[in-house]
Length: 185
Image (tube, rainbow, N blue to C red; front, side, top):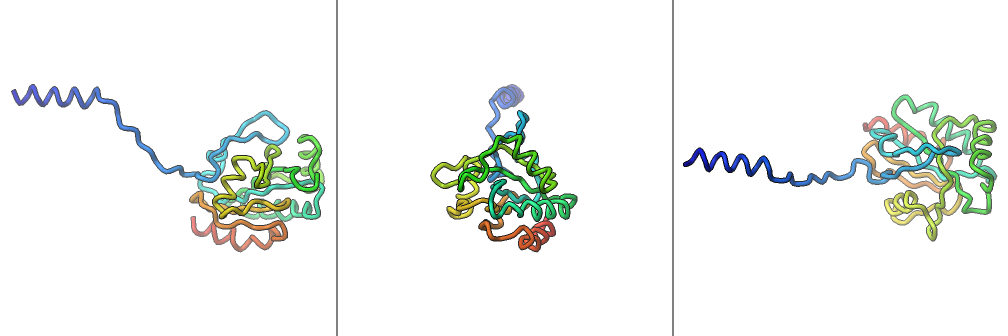
């Protein structure tokens, strides 16, 4: 009798549906799929940046801060082999400073500033019309949405926001924070 009860228990446990396991997202701020700039390929940001320190930047080709592309590329070149990546998202939300089609933006970035860090589709970043990605970043930064081009969000290897930086903060000024974040990982 006890063997029969035991076998019934084993059979019931085997056939019972497994309880779903819900893990906290390892990538809470970048759980989005986005399109590469001027292309059709879609990229899962979490897969792309897993375990990396990330700097997300809204960019523009015709802005007083556009020369920051040079500093962003320098940061990327200096730290990419240590697990750092810059993600650029053009936006035309401020002063009509990136009105061109994406293929022209891509050419401008490559030819003028030798940009090699990943660039993605144009996005809205302003609080009243922000894309889901920029809403998520701003919410993590206590409502700090970009108020102009070249706003930066620094994210640690753990996927958590380290800081939100307004346009005047240069990429070079972020180098010590990036270096520190890379050492933590």
